[in-house]
Amino acid sequence: MIHIEDGVQELIDSTDDLVKSLFESQDKMKDFLLTLSQMYNTSYSNILLLKNKRKDISFVANKETMEKYKFHIKDKEEPLKIIKRIKAADEIKFKIDEVYDISQTDAVRKEKKTYSKEYIEVLLKGMCSRRGISFEDNNLMLNLENIITDISSNSRSSNASMYNVDQYASQTQVEVNATIFAVAKKININTRNYNLKDICKWGINKDVRTLKESLKYIQKFTNYFIKDFQTQEKLNHIENEKEEDEEME
Image (cartoon, rainbow, N blue to C red; front, side, top):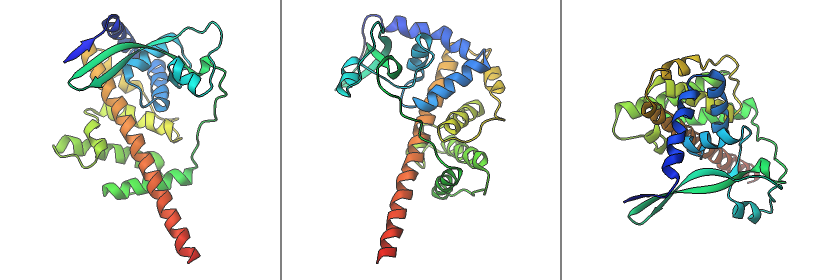
């Protein structure tokens, strides 16, 4: 059973124009994907709702959570409305939740985590190995593209996914390219020559439902790819610890 509280449908409907406008501007698409690279756990619709109110969104939480971590909300700051999905027993409930971005608090922002080129190369090499695909030396973007394309191909050609991330694999090349851009931004791979024009061109005449489904795939795929990347980080850390233990012996 699905229960939608008052005001939620109005918020959902308000995202229609936001979705359409996203594909009408390369700058807006780039800005959305940059935010997605930071807030990959957040649904595309909530990212759009948040960015419609504040441009500098990076991390949000409700008042209680902010106070729990000793972050105090600045005077005169207004809460931002998002849609919260709650699953309990045989019911799924959608309600409005009021949150604040960390920029609305007195918290000191931490510097963005950065990775060296060498470190990214090691992790991508491990991911290629796990997936059984070739690794190209000194070409981070190509390896990233190959991994994401492999995930997409596996999902399209088989009902049985190789990895959990595959269940959210992209369905079109447009979604593949958008995911590559968002992930590259997250792990500090240069996107200077990456063109978002074709992504916008693809969506310009599509209906809202198709565009929303596409954004959902992009968000889910980005989320699970980054988690898979983080899994590789853990595997790499374990392997390094093992090697250190062997040296000590």
